[in-house]
Image 1 (cartoon, rainbow, N blue to C red):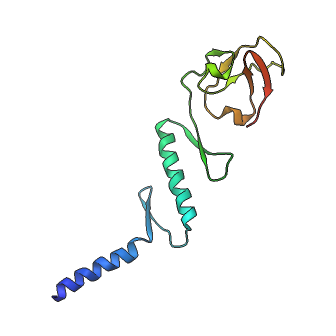
Image 2: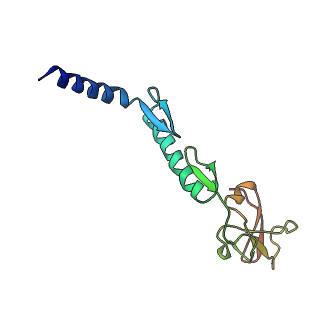
Image 3: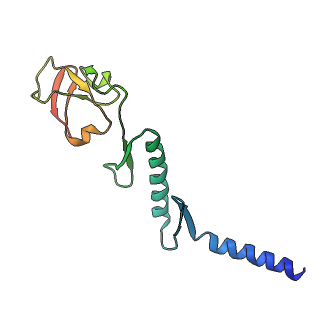
Length: 134
């Protein structure tokens, strides 16, 4: 084999050896030598979740389960009257003055997802369920 052929093979081998050390992220190059497979997988899942959430014009937030993500985004029926969560895309939010156990309550559909994490009162079957934190 000619000297030129060996040089090309050496360059390709060098690129293969060095190339695995880098990860393209947000148009920049990050060295990942000391990142475990688990951490790399977590970062890739987070990136995928962020892309999906961005498509919904939402905000990526950490889930209650470590290593998982939720997307807080506007709902399509926010503000509509409801008597339970089955009437809404998300929760049926109770009026501020309702007391747990009160019946005949009309709520409004949540304006955005993940509101239950903020400790809002909800309505189910026309009954004020009080504050629920999930």
